[in-house]
Image (cartoon, rainbow, N blue to C red; front, side, top):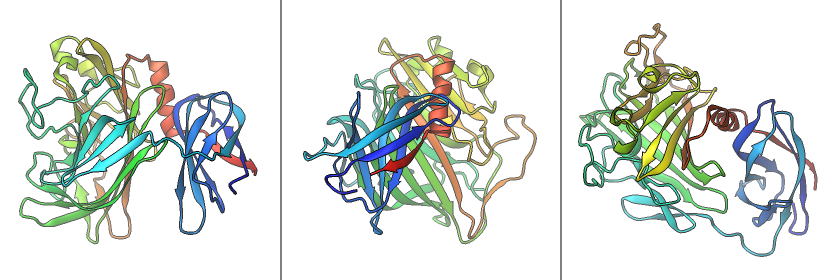
Length: 373
């Protein structure tokens, strides 16, 4: 695609009405980094350039119908696009900013595990508990290993990294870039036992962006090891967020809902493609939507979601949830384990139909195909 050329793209729904879609298109021999999606609603396009000259183009579609087909034009522009998502790194953290306002910081050094803290709505309201990272007056003080939004597990070859009895060390920051559509952090992490023994390597990617439905974090993890690594059968894990105390179910103003209609404490340990925790923070409506991907092992995940404010999944747990036993999940040499999740932070209490469409936008996003250039 030259500087003076436009691309015509066919966007097609995959049989599911989908919301909050991060659309991608691979174009050969792309050479422009300043592209927008034209039409009634102009949108920026972010370009990831590859060494072979190809480029992956990304843009956001708020909603695409189940059988909808539409032609859209991607056109080069002369002026630089505004970098909506900016990333700033210091020695211990990487700050993520939407339009120069803090969204989160990714803590990568001098911690037992990397984590995001805080997570904010556009109003500045936190959707995580302050304790133990930056305690606020009146915060509950249980479970000091619950730090913002994090990943850990209670049985990795028998080692408990959930309770910080081991460490997840960021060995290398591979990428931390912002852009007009999203910001991305990629790190290479080592999971280590309490005595420092290496357990496995994890490549983690966090993508931060915003749709009409809310602020979004896409998490992709790829685990590798040269020897067999087993994730044991325990509820202590895995991907987790500790919500603000005012949203807790046991304090009377928070609620839990999963894709099957299980509510509040009845949602604990139940398998579902998505789970929603919603309530009020500082009098403001707020919700956290946690999505599982159909390509993940054990899909749909059981949810380790508690009335006291822990919101986690349990993809490797069966026994504690009263589910039938299954073979333990292993990372094997030459056989990496890849997992994908999405977190949507919302200033609303969405209904089930909206939430289902947001899940479809993650699980079955519309396909973009090049028509002409």
